[in-house]
Image 1 (cartoon, one colour):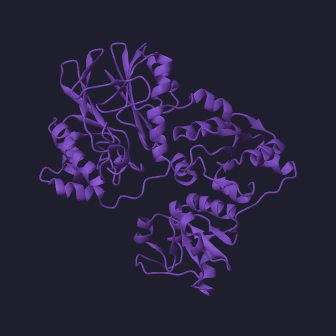
Image 2 (image 1 turned 90 degrees about the horizontal axis):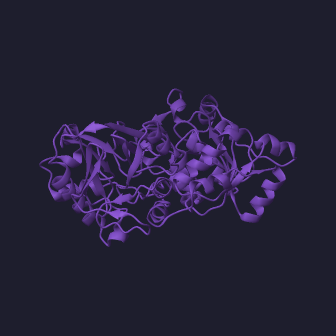
Length: 471
């Protein structure tokens, strides 16, 4: 028996490969499916099943393409209604895999079709659960995403999840291994642990949602408390996972089209494409195409693309190192952004050599900011970290506008004097800078190194939160 977790850090997502006696199953595959095909070939195994724990919202699964390429059926739990051919299993239905058995446990609550797959070993002993978004390590799936589809409130979905956990998962033995679909950093839960594998027994001790003495009312309150609005792209990813999508091969082929600077400008103007620069923040700050948006590959790339660009049908043109173009197109497609039209051949150097204009982002070191603040303590400082980060500690008198909410708070920014922006380390503040400059706001200065450098400096910080105004 082989059980392999294939974890993708950018999405905090776990897909799974299970093999026994020449037969393999893939659970919750990513959009690019060749690695799963290659993995099975390495074991001289045939992919027999493609199992989906639910209709994912935070990424586009590779189930359809993988089924087309291997002939393996797609399996969902009860109540699923995909637009393509699939097996909609019954609760308790079992599927043989070599010497193993995979049993479907219907565990609605995160979504109504959500199911957990219980793996039994060759002796019929419960070995592991692949819990999807029903049970995470340290948390459970948020119950607010499927309200419209289920015609239920988030409280009703949470109550359903409460019973799924207690009726289907908690009765299992403590030594059963838990393999969740996501880990810390995913928007599908609130308080996930950094670990990606655990035993059910340990989760019963550590996971607030599995407390034995917890009432339904307590569970509903705790699970629904503090939920942030889901990213705008989530419903569109659900639609693609449920109804279908273009082949990943077609998406990549289209995105690998190389444009000269002249062609790049013409296509951008004709198509209304967004110019997305995925280099590192220092390179972008030094020189970039005016009105381009920075979201670097070296950070939480795909989630921020989905959070900030929102429309998966948006045409995109890339500024990227040529050896990173295919990776970029692939990572965009993982969250449903399939309309990458191509990239700038030769990058910014070619753009400049062709005589086209570039822009830059002014910046200061933390020491330079400290000197400026000594002279003018009321100088506007914008902190684009999450509210929780800001509350924990922030620059005294700084104003918090989380990056995810930036577009809704542009009127709060100073329009007659320079203001300074920072995040934790420089990644998010550069995204913010690019968004603001694209909207014609240029009186900003980025703080190099962000708050991680600020706390080492003489700049005053506090955890006291008080109302602040900028104008």
